[in-house]
Amino acid sequence: MDSKRKRPPSFAHHPANRAKKLKSQWVNSQKIKSKWKADKRKHMQEVETEEVDEVEDMPVPPMQPNSPPSASKATKQSEPPRHQQHPRSLRDRAREAYSRSSLHTYKSEPSGKRQRGGTTGRGQPNMKLRMGVLLETIKRDYR
Image 1 (cartoon, rainbow, N blue to C red):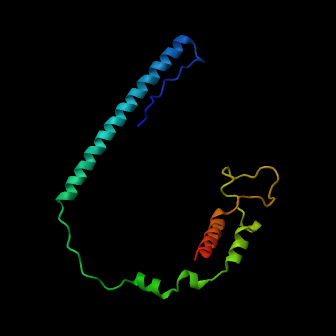
Image 2 (cartoon, rainbow, N blue to C red; image 1 turned 135 degrees about the vertical axis):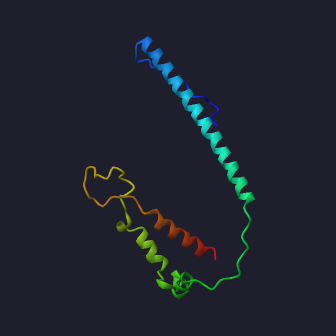
Image 3 (cartoon, helix red, strand yellow; image 1 turned 45 degrees about the horizontal axis):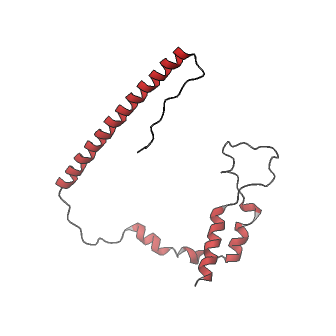
């Protein structure tokens, strides 16, 4: 796992005797945590071996012959494929991907509040659209 051990904090901002106590408390708590993690790891290994034994003991159910198609397959077949539904030219998709309307701010503002400037139309480009256009141009060029 970790080749380096985490060193205890020095607590240099405390008086010497208080720093010693805090350091020893930290070491003790780390020991307790490591013991707990080891116990948990051992327990998980035991549970996994028990599950493997149970799976090996269970008989395999026989395979059933092909069943009639379900309703979900019928609905999928009635719809035309996606590329036939709404054919859009590569030029239209590129125009949309690089337009100002495709800029978004939902990832660039994790706090959810606007900074200076208000709504000035700035934002992050929608890279999903741009990469889709790029992929299509690569596919088209290498056909």
